[in-house]
Image (tube, rainbow, N blue to C red; front, side, top):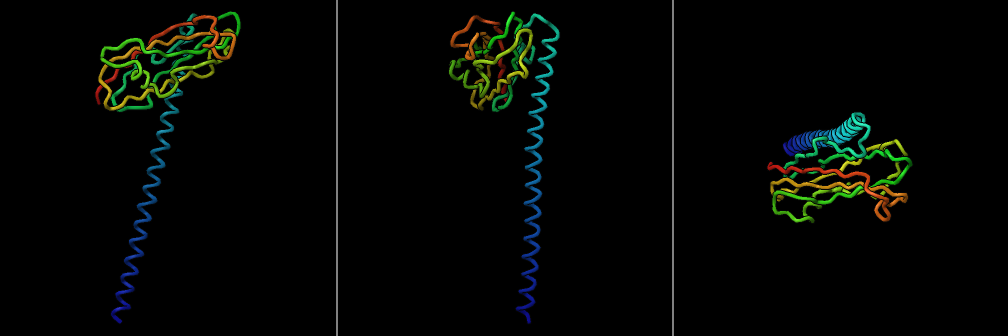
Amino acid sequence: MRTKKAAMEMSVGTIVTVVLLMTVLILGLVMVRTIFKSQTENINAIDDSVKSEISKLFAEDDSKRVVAFPASGEVVIRKGTDNTGFGISIRNNREEGYYFGYETAFEDSNCAVTEEDAMDLMDIGSTLSGRYINSGEMMDSPIVVRLGVPEDFPICRLRYKITVKYSGQENAFSSPIGIHDTLYMDLNIKSE
């Protein structure tokens, strides 16, 4: 009789433990899904705000050919941060439609950093080879240049030169007609 009672108590204890563990597992999965969903919504909100600000910058001055956001020309980023960046948009104020592209090049810094290391901070979007824009129109959506700064990168300020070219062919850099505009963007790297 005692063994049956002990076996029954152990079975109930095991069932309770399994139910509690499953509850914790489900709550953990719901929490992880919520975190990832909110991160995606935050990134989309940032992209929408960049598009809105760039449209405002073009609306303020009809003669602008290229705008970047932030308009201050400076991105402040902390070491160990990624998925931050700046937006670029191009307007064609020429007589006819052309293909436009841009190149980003390391220009200067106030620390001992190589050109290769400076360019490696750009995860994506450092170049655009050809985007057709009709006369009098601007890009449908700006390009966001994504930056990532590793933990071991020195605290400093870097300057990048963005050269926008135009061409009659899809690859604006293989046979450019000329330089459409040039602008500069500073990257200010701070400690954590």
